[in-house]
Each structure stands twice: as structure tokens, then as C-alpha cells.
Amino acid sequence: MQAGATYTALVGAVITDLRNQKVISQGDLAKGVGMSQSAWSRIEKGGAVMSVDQLARAAKKLGVLPGEILARADNTARQMQAQGFEVSYEKPQRSPESGDNSGLLLLGGAALAALIYAANKK
Image (cartoon, rainbow, N blue to C red; front, side, top):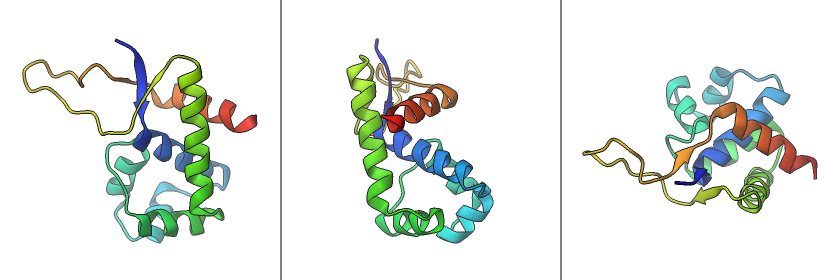
């Protein structure tokens, strides 16, 4: 079983990183996107997907283009794959019998943030 992350989680971690750099609270960003803080939290953690419109509104609030967020996520995915980590482009499915997530162990938030930081420094 190889550790990894979903692409959705990478996008969420990039947004979290940008939000922290800009010192914007999660609640303020959620409000700017037009959703609740709890729903936005799920997006940042990779547990929910956002629409293109929501991505565009978040990017505007963060002072970047939507494509920059995706480019950073792509760069991180390439770096992770080069280091032997799996990147799934589908949301992990949980097996009701075993409670696992089909062999994809999600990286912890701190580890994912470190990978994003390192990937975007290059």
C-alpha cells in the first residue's frame, strides 16, 4: 500500500497555503466564495470538490489566477509522483466492510503542506 493524496486534496492544500500566506481566515475566504466555513473546510481538506466558479472566486480573493492554483497543484503532484507517492484523480472510495479507502493513505496536512512548499520553491 503506497501513501499518497487525491488531486482534490492537493488543490485544497494549495489554497490553504495561499490563504495562510495572505493572512486570510478560513471564514473570510468561505464568505468571499459564498459558502459556509464548514463547507469550505471540507474543500481545503480535500473532502469535497469545488466548482469552477468557486475556484475563480477563491483565486480572486487570494490575488492569484485560478490557473496558478491548479499549476501549483500540478507541480506538487509531479513532485510527489517523482518521490514515489501516489496521486489519485478520483475521490477515494471507502469500503463499507473494511472501512479503508481502497489502498490510498492520505498524507497528513503538515506533510502535504511541506511537499507543496518544496514543490513551489523549485
